[in-house]
Image 1 (cartoon, rainbow, N blue to C red):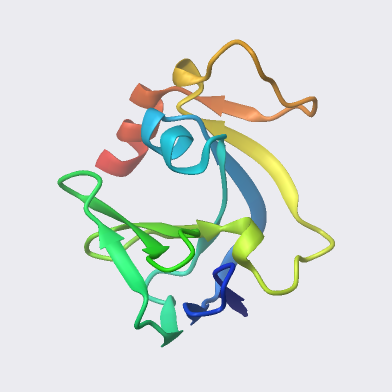
Image 2: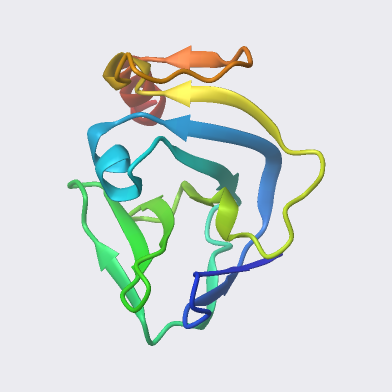
Length: 135
């Protein structure tokens, strides 16, 4: 599959693990996107850049980084620095798949009270998410 930023100066290919979409409510995602960050998991190491002269990386923690286009500002991905796990902005995919399944919200204990999604999702706290990455 392929995706790109808003201006088309950063283009990438990837392989999806499945069609499950997640929303992250952590403070960094909310600040970066002005909303919950909607992502989809990709196969480890499958993110390849076809155009990357405007790609910038932001080391958002000791173990992870975020990628964005430094021309238009589109948030593109979050991944472990060792690339063992990563996800991409679901809305950066060139052709949105008809069978996407929004099923998980992470950092639910960081979500502000003024918004909520109407469908039922699995809800994981910060502690539960960190435990998943620690195993």
